[in-house]
Image: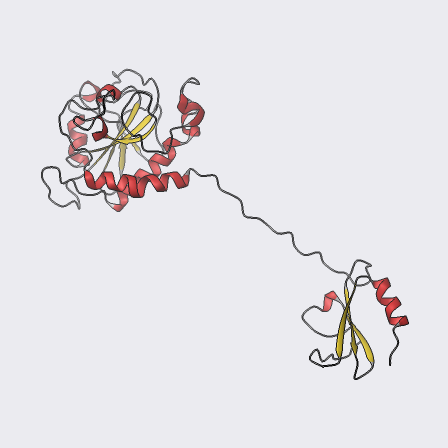
Length: 285
């Protein structure tokens, strides 16, 4: 097995006869105008001597890898030496009957699988064994839609971008057929509105949550403790609260303090020593 994508079924079409890739610049989405089973059977008629794509996906998301990613597939014509191709089923299974250019949208299973595949293949780590001179080896494949098929473009695209009359001047021809709508308007809308934003989000660095240090425990008798000294003006009595009684409202002297008493005054005392001085010097009047 050569360069394979985890999560897909490795199923080569026969002895390798295709030339090697020259780079991994673009991942291109296609539609089959057929089922995965039918397309797989068609590709196997002539092996790598016929037409093939790197991947084929069924309506349930099951994906076959027909071609080693170190080698070219025939799905993108002039872009074969730098484009990774993914064919997706649109007939059979649960797809509605359709004709002409009214290609149905991808199923939820297909959308989720496409997101997973794009996320994996855009990562630089996936291209660790590619030649060091290739851009994908250094930075992966950009998680953006290529605007056209010009040779310098890198990112994610769809087949129709390289089909006349949509192909821009100077862009690579990705098909010999004129007017081919692949992968269809509904699927193009899913790519731009759902799939690409999800793939972009997956590529963003994860910011670890800020972990607050636990509060410093208080130990009775330490000088760095904080005490609250209470003076009940009506009872003419001082009381103090320590941190280890927090929430209990029980003073260490054993008194019950009425915190709602109108004559009660609270003073924050920073240290044990300071508290001792105040207790000694504070007049009770």
